[in-house]
Length: 250
Image (cartoon, rainbow, N blue to C red; front, side):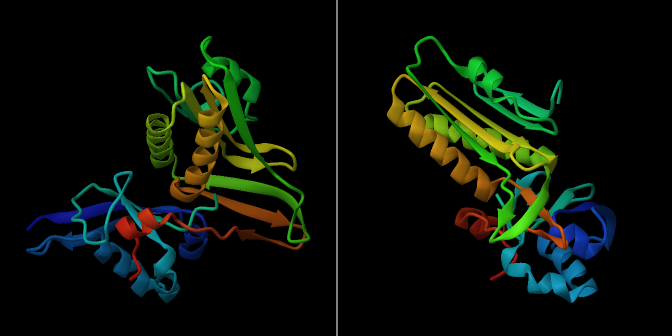
């Protein structure tokens, strides 16, 4: 029998619910069939029944990859409980630059869209499409003061790179850049930028739209909105493919 201790991470509203962002969990001696991700979830659901009530919207990750609840775990694993998504060096906390020129990054500073454009545009490109998601001053008529974004950074940058590479393979584009802002954002600031370049406009438009749509539903980033009379984690939805693979609920 082998003792199993894992590090468990909580994000977004789950961090508030559990009262911590992470903790070490000693599961004890491993049973004959081993421990699974579901066992960790059930441990915390027994501690706080409210977690069980959210099971249908929570997905699980092991060592920065989505996994099924039946996935076996080992001593030293990092396990993350992820609520629905709302959508380095220098200015970036994490960066991945591909040999093909694709660029993926997380930052806590203002996103310099013009510099990113110059960085990924090639001489043979005839089109460049950029999308910026910006902070608006209200939600359903309720005045917004500011937003705060947090994410599972090590996993998020890997997911952004995976999405970008898949989009580049699916569309006739030259390069793509995905950059997301973290921390406190004021009204009018850009929270996310997607840029696609290509010889012709059609693929660039399609790739940019695909990029923001997939990023908002598959990358573990959460948004908290602050109002004059309170704050709330913004509801969202995981992509169906993520729920099928790593969802806790039935």
